[in-house]
Length: 166
Image (cartoon, rainbow, N blue to C red; front, side, top):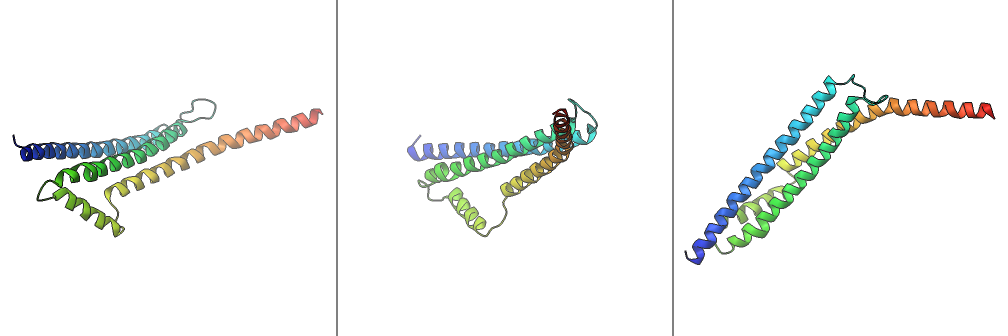
């Protein structure tokens, strides 16, 4: 195998691996979306379940939802970074040896497209992750507020009792 054929073979293999990586990214996003929907349904169907004192299943699922949303956001960032590295640092360098540079041209086109402030799929994923995190946060606040008020009332009552003793 001559040098050019070897370079092309490595290029082809790397491009196939990049596509598999992108497929894994989509599957990971499907997992997070499904997990968030499952958590929402779990909150709906277990809303009356109370674990310790006043800690409800809804509160537990809301904390899980916030965590899941944060992990999803970080995952989107990680995949985007790795995909950019695969494009710009590896594939484009290999393409320097070719007369035609399809991925380099594609990447430049994407960068030009993004400079027009158009939302990309990863931006939409991040928005969904952020909205879901805000939703779960609001549920947490609504579940924690009665607990906090109860603790505050008990503390005030205890302070009043202590004042009455002295």
